[in-house]
Amino acid sequence: MSNNKENSIAAGVAVLVVALLLFGGGMIKIIPAGHVGVVFNLFGGVEKRVLNEGLNIVIPIVETVTVYESRKISYSFTDGYEIGNVGPPIKCQTNDGQQIDIDVSVIAHIDKNKNWQLHQDLGKDYVDKLIVPQTRSILRNIVAKYPIDTVYTTSRIGLAHDADKSLRKSFLKSGVILDELLIRGIVFSPAFAEAVEKKQIALQESQRQNWIKKTAERDKERKIIEGEGDAKALAVKGQAIQADPRIAELEFLEQLDQRGGDIPVITGAKNAILSIGDLFKESQIQPPSELNKKD
Image 1 (cartoon, rainbow, N blue to C red):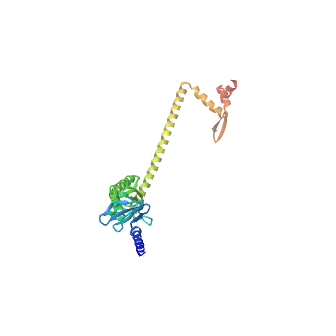
Image 2 (cartoon, rainbow, N blue to C red):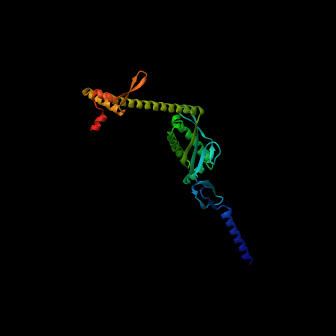
Image 3 (tube, one colour):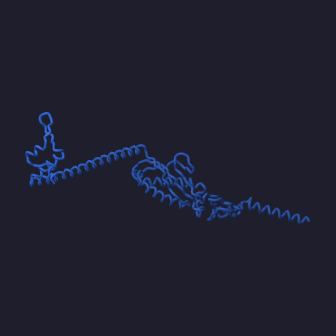
């Protein structure tokens, strides 16, 4: 009877020890969603494997696990407070000596397959050791290759492309993948901003003067064309009148007929109306209206 009791106690102790090893001793390691685990072996150092999300088995005491977030994270260099802010805008200098401040965001995530390497080389504070200094250094080196005019205009897309390419290569060596580099804003020195404003005003004034000049030239060309047309018309009419003088008389009579047969004649200080009928009687020429009646 006593032996059975002792056996039961021993079995209970064994179960308790196993439970402590499994749960209290850390044999089971649960990795949360969006994270990975790196294993450090007491005898072999950092293991070249990672623990994925969910339940994982490790050797208590011998193996310890460090958990890393594997989601995309945004790191911003900007003024003011915002989530992921790691510092102020990056101060840079162009190749012609102009000072600028660049507001930039870096979106990146760790390479799960190389997480063990990141842990071995940099550790948990890889943001301060890799992302922040490399972003500042590479962006400054890239900006130093460009003149201020390139940075100011839309050509800065090439600048962003070069910075993205260099930063991506640098991150990847340490087990971090760059997803996107966003240049959110560039602040120029007050002196340069004033110079750009004056240049823009001068450009707009120059464009306005060019428009006025072109408009005047078009008006001049139009008047020349109209004048040439009138001159040609007069020349043709003159040739016709030289060939037949009656054309001039007929045109004169038609214009008088359109006026009702009366023309104003100035006599002294007053206007007098001369009847065209008398003129026709004296010249024995019938007005066009009478000719039309006969027809």
